[in-house]
Length: 329
Ligand code: AHR
Image (cartoon, rainbow, N blue to C red):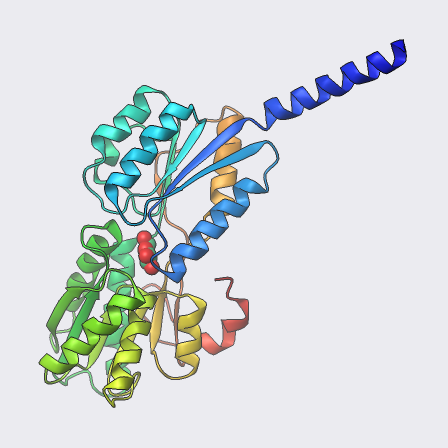
């Protein structure tokens, strides 16, 4: 009997210790699920946390609404979570709620779309794409490609399909797009409007541009989903995407690789969504009491297109067909 009691006590202690360890609550406020990129980003982070021993994921999908994200952050505080992962649907309007997070001394990990108030708040680490550089590369790819096919002096009409207005990905890529256009005087912007980073809005936007604008030579779509929506509209209008209209997307999702290989899209600039490994490494360091660098980390990213070999300044494009089998998202 004594032996049985001791065994039961040991079991209770083991289970108690395990559940105390499993008590580390990692909260993640995600924007929504607007694109293939976002789905891959959510999957990468969710899997990394859920598969980590001792961590519990508390996840909130804000359905593209800032007010939902603010509510979620306050709920995380009430629940007493141990760390918060945050990306903001837009770049402004976060100072108050993020200061509330700081007041409760909950470590804040900034990912993807960083808030404008980054210098006014405390955070443990920040990780995201270099949106200005991605936008610059989009236009540089188009400009250099045009030169490579002997159209470098031709007057080229450019349409810029922007992402969600006010999102740091839209603000940064637009800044990069416009800055790079200054290097190509033959390229002139004839349309510039938001397609909200979705295929569903990219399609009708392209359709309306095709009806109202005489000639579009190049489409710069600030993500691949919008580019793919535009491909549908271009085909429906009886034009040939990738030939009549040169299409440069961003993200480098598998569907864009398929479109490039099929000749429907010309290029895509990479923006990696695979944040899981970074999140795990950072939280483990945090748990170990290490001090982390506040410097914003940008992952290394590539440029992919039909034939490869286009130099966009500092990086040369890779032929999509050669690496399509390695795509993880
Ligand atoms: O913030 C990253 C951007 O958001 C991706 O480029 C886009 O596809 C997503 O919706």
